[in-house]
Image (cartoon, rainbow, N blue to C red; front, side, top):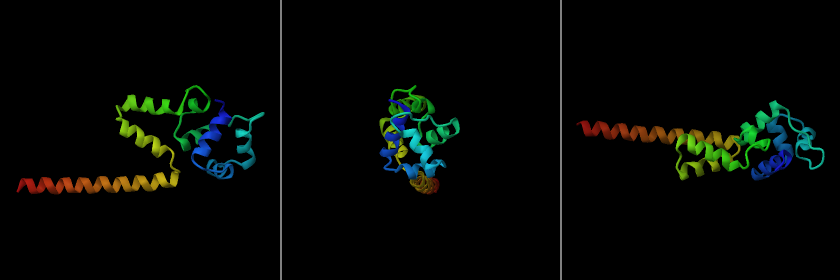
Length: 129
C-alpha cells in the first residue's frame, strides 16, 4: 500500500476529515490533500511524517511501506513487552482514539490505579492489626 493510501485509511479509520487532520498536524489543507491524492501525491516532510506517526501511534517505517501492516507494530510491542492478547487489544483500541479522548482515558486509568493502591494499603493496614 502506498503512503497516500495509508494516510487516507488511517484518517478515515478515525473518522476525521482532511481539514480536521490538517489542523491537528499543523499543515495547510492543500498540503494535506497533496499527501492523499491518487495521482502525483506528495510525500510529507520528515517533520510532518513524525507528527503523523505520533498522532496515529505508528512508525514512520509503517507509513513508508517498510512494514507490511499496522498489526506488525503491535506484534513487535507484544513481543518486546510480553503483552497478553487482552493488552494488545487494549493498545489497538487506544490507538484509534483521538488525542483528547486518550488524555481523558489516561487520567481515568491513573485515578483507578490510585484507588486500587489505596484499597491495597488499607487492606494491608487492617491485616497488621
